[in-house]
Image 1 (cartoon, rainbow, N blue to C red):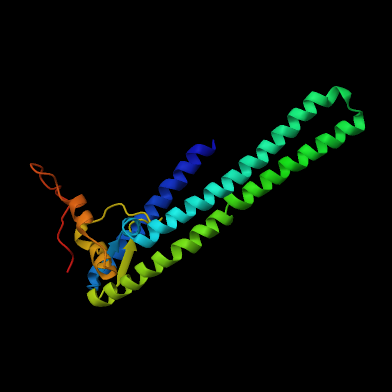
Image 2 (tube, rainbow, N blue to C red):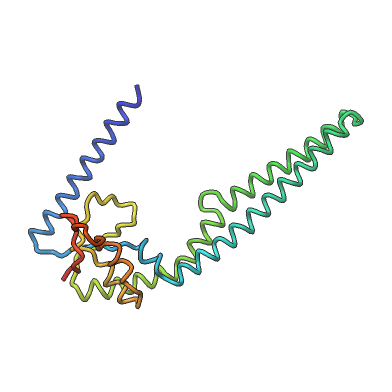
Length: 208
């Protein structure tokens, strides 16, 4: 019974979102406001600081993963020893061994959650390492916004749902140029191969 209700709610949310989006762009057009978007995910992929950050994040993740594997190996060793000696142990000794194993298992779960859980150490480390390249993008974006006199700028890589993006509103290249990054890779990705016609809704021309 819940599924149709949830589906209805989802449709209502999509409808409200579309209405809001149309109202926003309608108001923007009416008042001659300029808007555009960038793709921070693509920009980050071309940023040396971000590539270095990814490498550092992988190192931390590997280190913490190994620690957890070592802790699990220790638990397995305790379990095998207990199973081999169980017949020789008194009830009190069995309970003590079981308590030790249970405590170790709980410690591993808590440590795993501390590292890889929501807002755990890995999340905080990613946030710390990505701050430098993101600050660089933001500084470049501020200059582009001022130069092009933009009123709205969206991020194609964000959680904000962009149902359609016209390339003529794409300011990604301008931000990359401001950062001193090569824009040829992006231009090649939007240029059709030889013998292919460009899609009707695509344009490689930069916005003014």
